[in-house]
Amino acid sequence: MSRQMGDNHRRFLQTMMSIGIVDDHGAKALYQHCCETHNVQCPPDRLDDFIETINSKLQPLFMQIRKGMSEDNGQEHYALVNMAQTDVTRMSSDYADNELELFKKTLELIVGSENGTVSSTDILNSTDSMTTKKLKKSETEHLLSRLVHDKWLNETKGEYTLSTRCIIEMEPYIRTMYQDQVSVCHICHTIVFQCQICENPICGIKIHNPCVARYFKGRAEPRCPACNDFWPHEIPEIRRPRSQSRR
Amino acid sequence: TSQVQRGLERLSTAQVDQRAAEVVQYILMKDQKKVPVRRTDLVKHVVKDYRNIYPEIMKRAARSFDQVFGLKLVEIDTKNHMYILINKLEYTEAASSISSPTNPKRALLFVILSVVFMKGGVVRENLIWNTLKKLRVDPGEKHEEFGDVKKLVTDEFVRQRYLEYVRIPHTEPIEYEFHWGQRADAEVSRAKILQFMGQLHEQDPQSWTQQYREAHSSPSSAQPSTSSQR
Amino acid sequence: GKEKASQLFAEGNAFDTATFAEHLLSFMGLNRLEDEEDEQQNERGADGYLPQDAWHRLARRTECCFRTAPTFHYMMGSFHAEPPPPKQRIE
Ligand SMILES: [Zn+2]
Ligand SMILES: [Zn+2]
Image (cartoon, each protein chain N blue to C red):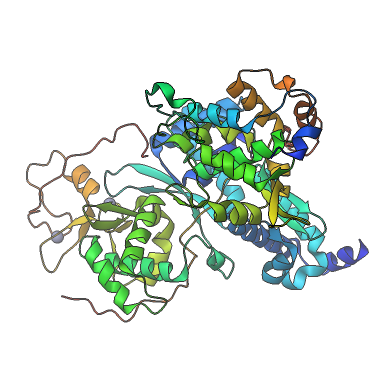
């Protein structure tokens, strides 16, 4: 099926290029804005069709607008991602080789952790084993703040997690590279980092915090959906995110 | 040409499209830093053994930029074969809930381009530095927003082809002057600059007679061009 | 010294960079110090300080003068995909 793109689609895509990721509220507002700007009808429930039209033209160019969930609040997001790994894509110069090595180490630390976080101290320590030019402490700190600014990492009180943008773009990569380390959420079946874990040692399933909130909502006694053991963790509230996109 | 014709006959459409897609990918990657793409690099890294049908590949890549992204692939330097991307869509205020990042370096660039344009197309560097100093930007000091200002202006903006930084012949000590670069010619609207000048100075843009004439005559000065679909 | 070009450009209105800079400072939200004799102070013109977002403010206003293509940034594919060292999970 070949649906034609119009300037409304192109404007949406261009905005995705400059912002990288948008939550579902923002995406709806942007969709409306793009259609109004170019005097095109925009049925409110047609956002996913609209994006599908863009994707049908983007995929031959190794790009895609992909949907995913925020591990923090469960909100749906759309990210513009690269799908190719070639000599050309590796020529990207946003980060230097040693900066990318440290990002990879950070990713490994997060994948290998229980709950998807790594402390700045552990990241700083991991520079000792760098094979490319070792980053100094100040350089590492500067790099980390750039990674947060560019929306590849999130940071709270010196603890780093993978951002929603990073998880959406890197999911296929993480699944293939870390097959035996990465876990999948028992509820939504996407990869999971920040989560609650079943304490039954022979079960040990992981569930995203927002998925926990939704799954156990209104249940008197929370039990593990896999082994039926008592679920001992505090059940988080469902967080209805404010209708504003992140800054 | 017939050579392209013959080359095409030996390849499937899918093969040619695939290579054109890689050209798109390469140009997008290079555009991250806004440095023009050279034909020699394109051939070396992407086009490779398809160089005999280079024009056809570029035609298809340009079509993708146009139809998918609303961008125009422009050869700014036909002698050295350098390409840039410019936007075909008219600028609009972003949707209210979307905060597109603003780039303060663009404002600095704007100031320099404006002065060069308003002064007739060429300006000695001292006038630029003095103007920037009035705006609290000292080329000799590290600026918290721009870092090394001198490097940004005479190196980064020059490599991106927004500015030309040319030595004035027979000056002692050595002096330089600024011109608009090829990218600025393709990407920046003199008419819109003049409009803002009018607003700032609270005067009619037409009162700068010469600049007004130039802004509304030169074809390359990024006049709003309606996207040509279909 | 005066620019040669500006003499060639004498027709119509002359363009004065000092005036331009003053207007820009106002546009960027310069907080002028309440100092009566600031007019004829140093060559920096009126003293005062620019707000944090001064250059962003100007960037936002002048964005419409540029027809710049947005840029595409990605993380996946920017480095070599080597499998991690054999797993040695710390239990
Ligand atoms: Zn889940
Ligand atoms: Zn269990």
